[in-house]
Length: 98
Image 1 (spheres, rainbow, N blue to C red):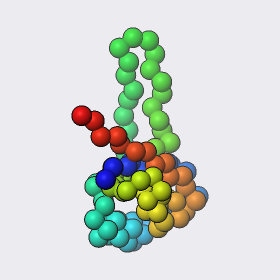
Image 2 (cartoon, rainbow, N blue to C red; image 1 turned 180 degrees about the vertical axis):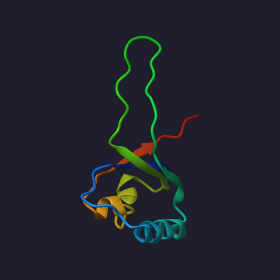
Image 3 (tube, one colour; image 1 turned 90 degrees about the vertical axis):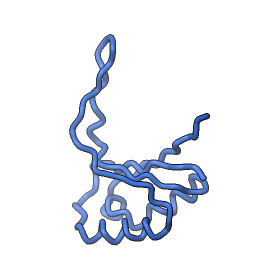
């Protein structure tokens, strides 16, 4: 089964409660498809030569999931506090190499 990143943007219309996150993460963990996640803090972009693009400030966190395909991964968005509070969720497949 492929892995996916659920990237959460910093654009919800209101903040989510800790309880909402607890319920959502508990559900993902019990589904057996949760592979980790975290808030994303400050950082930098570097490039060997020339100016680097600015850091992607609109990203606030990520969750790594296992799903059968993109459509299956999309079913795991429901209940996500960022999504439920009007924010954007971006799903990206993590292709297996080798």
